[in-house]
Image 1 (cartoon, rainbow, N blue to C red):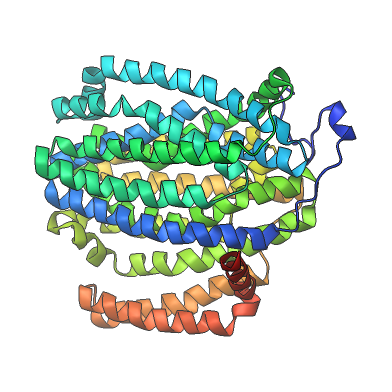
Image 2: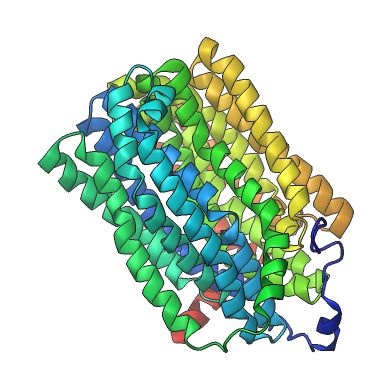
Length: 521
């Protein structure tokens, strides 16, 4: 299989797999995603609120330069953690979901071992390298705060291994069919622990303790995630052909490794580039401003994490109808969850950035630019997930690398001249390019698209019931806290009423039934 996409056809099995009788995807489709997405959405709400609170604490408790060092180094940490994962986050979900759908539980341990050994060894190498190279990294990231940055790098480096353990454990639980560990560990426990530990460390040790408190949260989540994964794994059979499963695993995963790094770089590297090209203070403003749009992505992540294994199961048995239905339903739900937030942020961008303090008002333009780009991303749905779960990881790799290349190129050209606005333009251009490329590929190769009555209805509802009243209040009352409150109230009432009237057309009846079914279990 090496050297080609697994998924040249929807099911690309080895010869002896032909004797296996595939287990049907159990009809869980959109209902299964609704249940998993509902659990993740609850966790995503907590994550967004707590993550936002953490940003406010850091922005207000630390001088802007030190806040910039915090945001730049923790963003860099997340990029390096992604490098360390070697793409196994998606590989584990893909293969564990696949062997469950095909009735081969004995392969679970083999795939997990194939992922864990290289990841942990590679992470250890990276940890040592960053401790040794901390002074050089500090100068590279922030030449106006090199010593503080180097210290932060030394503090963060030992926690890379712990973060890798957490990611392996939680990814395995998703592949084994449960979303609860993802919601509890990564969406709730980690951000809550980060907020608490950063606050305590900052009070006890001053600004220098903030980074250490943030990283220490991974110790808690790695322990919980590992216990949870071991409990689920104890119920599965022991491995079969270890060597063959390892080759199969990495032939799928190696393109994803590069793509995962590129994806995380698109989300976080611009903060590092702003620090390097414009200074620590603009990096603090940019990181704070982008916190709002990241909060909107939490809703997308909630549905995406639940949908990944469902897409893999349906594609494993070549059920294109189920994949298409799931794609359209999940896209409508993404639009419903994210568009009102993005519209509110764009309409009252100056007010929302003032939450971090008066020195952060230059981030308003960043909020508007990224809100518009992410609305388009939501409208196209989980197009990259569909492409990846069909096995076409090389296609998604090329798309992601093109997007990253455009983003870095625009950042290097625009940040020195336009500062954080240039960084926002670079990120927005990358988001739009990646999604449009993936949509063209999914449409041509799989004959799938995200547009149906639910998606169109959700988009129109967002524009009419949320966007129009928010814009009217903004024009009539201005951009201040009172106007923002009035706009949210009016738009919220109209939007909820619209969802109630159009609930069947939007698929909300199915979503509610799935949630009730989950509660009864």
